[in-house]
Image (cartoon, rainbow, N blue to C red; front, top):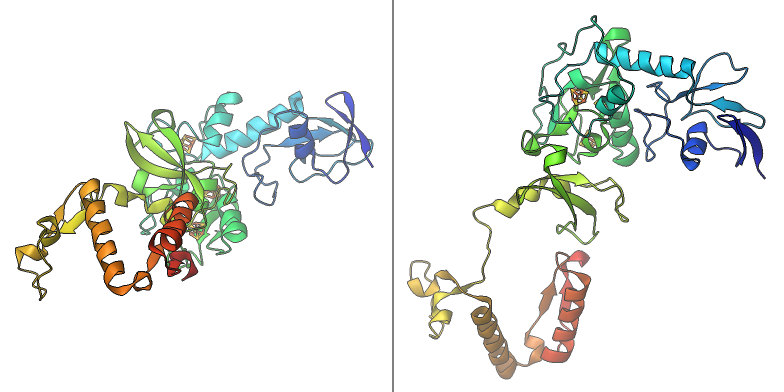
Length: 369
Ligand code: SF4
Ligand code: SF4
Ligand code: SF4
């Protein structure tokens, strides 16, 4: 069953139960939003998506208003535009005027709308001088509530996606503020540093400390990849500047995880450049020299030292030692342990290698632990 509405002067049929915003997006009409995100419950608090419905007393927030039969909706008339401009002015009045140095510049939804609606900050208001910058001591998330527009996307992302309920809204009127827990630190409010709140924040109020100041949106290349930490297979984008990874951002098209990531996937990327990271295979010196294994382990003896070698040599030594073990003790003396950090194809090959090349069913996978 469909209902009939008039949308920007055009008669159309739509499914009942949809919001005006959904209908607009289906019909490729751009209604601006700030607090709305398709992954989160709509709240209608930023008032950017207001539209005029004929014979209704006030402008309506399109994200929370359902279409009804016979409705006549206008999304872009003078009254609506005036209201959106006023809402933007109210936000900018108490907002820092420093897009030039703001981390979010170039991917800030407030900046984009101010540009689209040609809004300049009014002469009144606090201009974002009310809160301490980088006020939370957590290791990953930079909090600057001067840039907050009280859209509550962080509150919802934490509650609805991560189910941690860290963020909430405190006080009223001009003093209204997003706070962690009962106005404490994020970690004290049981934040688990997943960074979902940062991913959904439309401004520079929440940003990533590890990437801060390292590159702007237009300077980075987004490279989709799969997380190597576990077998879930979350997808995200590496942010790469001049060939070097400077951070991770959610890729909304990820089939497994959407925008969600855990702390390891989002903030555990710096191991890539850690000086202790092994980049070449290493073998004991006595193996490289073709000597027999010393009878006692002595960490000071050079024969036991680890030395770098090439893959060909390392695989030769491994194959030889495996062959010797199978010859002396049989195939079931060997066990194969594979990893969620490998691809499915690599794990499949190890399965074949274990059962058909070595001849043992002693194979297991770390994801079963
Ligand atoms: S949060 Fe957005 S509008 Fe505010 S200073 Fe940063 S880039 Fe500009
Ligand atoms: S990092 Fe995750 S758990 Fe912590 S406040 Fe943000 S969404 Fe909530
Ligand atoms: S911190 Fe960001 S997501 Fe949260 S209410 Fe402020 S602007 Fe919105």
